[in-house]
Length: 245
Image 1 (cartoon, rainbow, N blue to C red):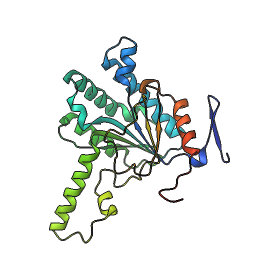
Image 2: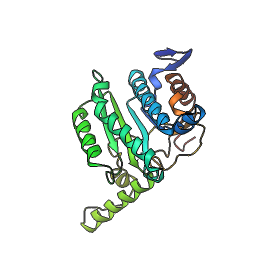
Image 3: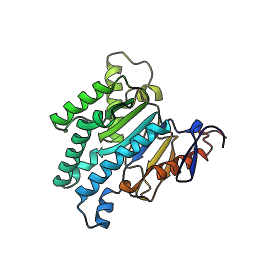
Image 4: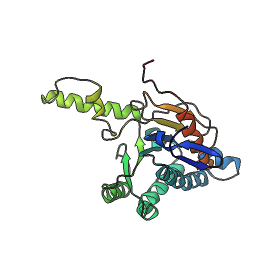
């Protein structure tokens, strides 16, 4: 490999070909807790702690965009106590994000539906997005109350509204893309899912059409910078053709 190398735990990655945008399905908190005889809530807390480490690792490696699947539209079907704990963790993360990222040029964005999130969480989202909007080194995107199918449905609804008002001449990929939550964000280069599951679970289903996938058996709370670099190294070993030869 050529270029500037970063070394950690005997893993060398080429900084010149770091993925511009990494998306992560953070899976395995519950199983991590169960293996240790702990509550699922404890698993989610450890997962939240680990997220902070991975954000910092991406920042230090030069990743430009990081999107994480924090809470899906389907997660509301979980037990109320677990949902309440997840909401508390999310609120705590948003409240402390600026302090924890002090001195780092990280912009925070949240994508997904605001309803039925609490007013308290919505206010924190607006506050932290506004406070970090001019930061440019890393865009950290949190998918919260997010569903890929619903995102596309919403985009199509906006297209229909614009067509009725005579604002739309042609329906194409670009017109759909610019009406998605991620309209200002490039598509992911690398999608990582932890815990050994091999599905995308309604996450960024429009945007990952040409993403490279990496599935790790490691449960999310144990997914370290070393594991992240292994995923990036695998990505760097692949030839991306985007449908060509």
